[in-house]
Image 1 (cartoon, rainbow, N blue to C red):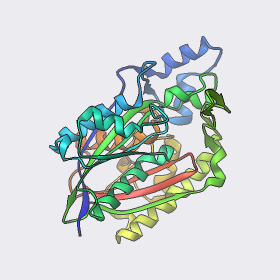
Image 2 (image 1 turned 60 degrees about the vertical axis):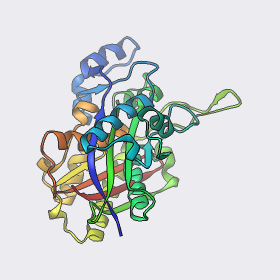
Image 3 (image 1 turned 90 degrees about the horizontal axis):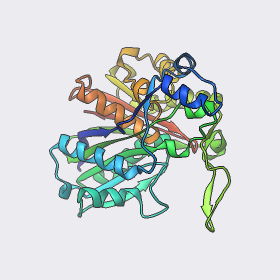
Image 4 (image 1 turned 90 degrees about the vertical axis):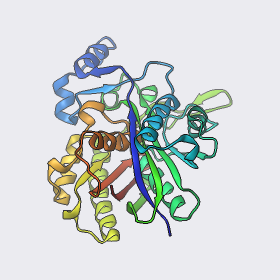
Length: 324
């Protein structure tokens, strides 16, 4: 039987970095009051990267894909599977994964998108692992990419200050020893209204509300409880204890969620990778962005146990435990 290992990581952020002060000034011109202190105190976010109007998700994803391939020492023609997680695709179809396939020249790859919002990368990684374990792929490119600024209501202070744009990617290779040790995915569609963008395009018109809407308190409560339970499930599956986790790389939504989750799991805060202060919430891109950041700065080392977790609209959540 063959297994999947993470062979390389990559990421890309739009060049424009917007501080809380700059965002607050821009929102004030729209009649929306906020401040750096208000945002930092409630979220831990200090800045975010925003794509210029017209920049599409496939462009960010392509840059992250090239970076991951370079880091893995892989060529595009080796890739036989591309799975791209996003809630902001370029088009209804073709899939954004197919656009990336063309951009990088991965002519031998199957390609499709996964939509699980902020859990998307964890869902995509678990799916790619299953393909490799089944012998259906040997080199998979897994991407999380978003241009969330395109679906934000900039008059809604409760959401517009929370999100940013970006992309992250990993290369999975087939190996004799497992790198992906365990995975747990779950959803609860009855909670769909607490985080959604419920509009759609039909008959040439926009129906419903096209902007992201969130019940922050409900999401907070669900996130901590469900991620705590999911972490314990994957550790049990892998036969390791919570104390064996070297690094947690959770979805980067709110520093309060990360702090409470670490406390419940008994993981020291210094072993939690936090990038939301610089990137804000980049939805499906947040986990691979944080993973790539911690690998490239030397924190995450080969052989270490890393817990990757996502939680988001749907309502969806999940965990993947990997040995680097």
